[in-house]
Image (cartoon, rainbow, N blue to C red; front, side, top):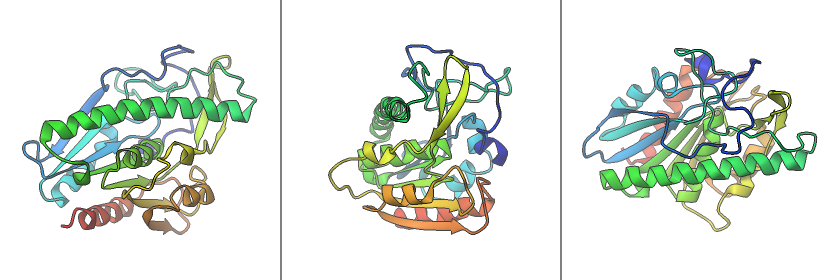
Length: 263
């Protein structure tokens, strides 16, 4: 499951090809739940990484977190869009930020505009889903923590701040993103997409926990520290570790969430 959470290094093509309707904004592809399914006192949402799935993302972590957080419902949604690497049934992977790839990919500003367009559309989609989730369980945003792994950390950070949720955990993130070309039917570059520009302009009370390795090339440290500079953030930098997701990271996140929920 660790390898799948960090997926995003293989080549190949599948899924949607240059569709005008990307990202898809219909129902979540799949949603798994763990812990207190009725009358929970708090909610943790887990967002999977690129070419990952709800099942793989939750493996070995979701139940551990549910057991460690009193009265907590852990919810793991799955993007409705398959990744370009997604294979046959049983090996399907999904992508929260599926791109059309019809812009000029040699223009970095055009790349940033496209990724921000996709991310904002997905954020609004996810936020509507979260509001329904909170309403269903009669909970307020101060009982909500969003967590994300690799690509999922982008959504966790942006949506938590935009919703003014209690907190967000970026595990192996916040990452940059690869840039998709429909002409090449593959990724042709990538980098930091100035995610800080998607955050609220006014101060919010959302707290952050960022858990990363110092050798992670997917997480540009200077950009991330700038992005979260205005927030109360707990930083955990694992010396010599890359985009590896060791078990220790989940314990760091769990300890922080327990404190954030006042447990």
